[in-house]
Image 1 (cartoon, rainbow over the protein chains, first blue to last red):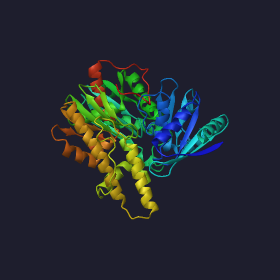
Image 2 (image 1 turned 180 degrees about the vertical axis):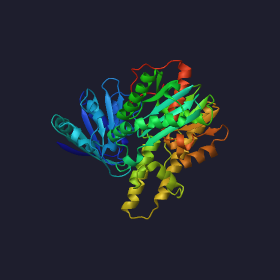
Image 3 (image 1 turned 60 degrees about the vertical axis):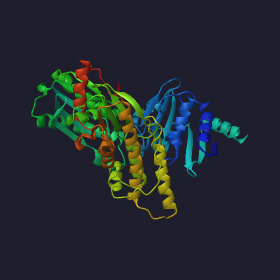
Image 4 (image 1 turned 90 degrees about the vertical axis):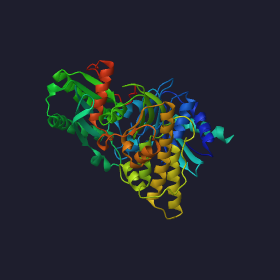
Length: 153
Length: 331
């Protein structure tokens, strides 16, 4: 299931993150795609806020992974640097863990991702607006359907 | 007191011997930069393998150059985190082997504490002291009221400074590691583009570089699309001006607010010439120190210095159960 939508500014992106946050549960895997500067970390920050995380959620590029634990754990990954190698053994426990895995640049580690997951690809239209393509397989298809439905009314 | 430092948190394998937290007897560094360059960044698994290959050699070099025996070492200080877990574990395991074999106490050090203490090699830290930590993984302002006492008063809400530099370099087509190249090109360009100075007037010590990064990427993208002529040097110069304006202004404000006796800059971006020049020019009422160029990038001498002061302060070492922690917090 695939759904294409548009957010005109940050507050609309925040709103989308809020809507999605209602579906999060242990083991949830979200892949974020899009060029540098498209808003992957920003989306993650919004999502974290709606998960009740108060700490600063900043870029995990350097260590590949940052963990936030209060309530449902958030495993925030950025696999930008794995482009030419395709995997990292340390991430396995977190992608298949008991929290929410958010993976920026997920296509770079395609081989270690689960069959069923949600992906969100962000494309910059101009400085503020973004086109977002949400795609879900397996149980995640339902979520995409649901969100598309809610947004069409 | 002779402290052996061991550092392997990212892509440099290093062992050093430092006397009394001050005099560097040796600082052997094996850099993997040439290996990672072809991948456009540090590849964690390759980094681990290279650490394994190089670490024995680096131990030998450090001890030989210092002209001492293993039995002369009083303490081993090893980077326990943060960093790449596979890389950290190799340094920690090797340090433990030496510690157990020669019955030397061992102490785990936070990588950023090491970068801060790199400054003590040339200038004794004086308190209260303000540290601006700028690297590929960190952007923080830290107040120290005494040795091994860290209070983080501000940090980045998104990208680290060094990370923004590397990402912009990548978009501009500069090879890895791009940060130093952006600095070099900036010196040849003009500050032509009006770029935002994120949070410059926020009144607190928080930073944000993601929006500025996106702004530069958009600017470049639009000029390419419209086939407008531009010089990469001018983009670099404009970006560097914006970044250093924010860093310097906030550091200056923090220095006043906390009435510090000195300002020190730490981390890989401390090697940035534009930042060094502007810090020295703008902050004139308290001394501003930078580590020597050799101690800006990752090295074990700084870990040994930090180890010395941590041991002096706490009076105790860690036990052999010490391990690497990729997300260790600075305490």
